[in-house]
Image (cartoon, rainbow, N blue to C red):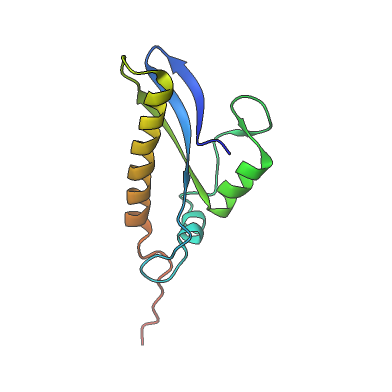
Length: 118
């Protein structure tokens, strides 16, 4: 599975699909993060086309996204001049991954909680 799919690139602007592994642990109310991601509608979907060519994802990648094991974030990033593009993409992935996991955990911290009012 690829962590980064470059979708478009113009000058220093890259539009990428970042594939972020989702922890196999539970949130504060005992719901698995992966289930919360899919069942909330925040994940489980891809903006890429199924296939084996450039800009596509294969069936295994799609299954991981649909199961919630991987969260896809499509984002435009600006790569600054100086370092090799591969290193800049790796650095961007690290930033996107950290932010995406923090945001998901904040949004889904209590997903799945239920309460019956007497």
